[in-house]
Amino acid sequence: MILGVNVKTSSHGGHSPDTVAELCVDRLISVANSAPPEIAQQARVARQQMLEVVRHYVTVAVQEDRRTVATKLEQAGLPDVAQHLRSL
Image (tube, rainbow, N blue to C red; front, side):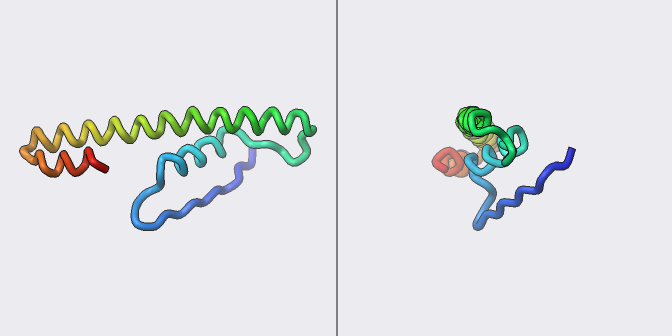
């Protein structure tokens, strides 16, 4: 199997959950140019639904990780830093 290369860049930080979700879904599902129109349409709908689910869980993962890091910062005696992290 030959996989295409998909490159995304970002400025002033890492990728957003939306971008990560798109990269993930791009690897999971694609629509061949040679697909019959009905099949291609079904695949596009399935891809969009998958994107929404992956985007949701990537966002949840980021939020949960921030909560974990904020808790560790509080435990380390840095409540102000923890609060700043929570506000992002």
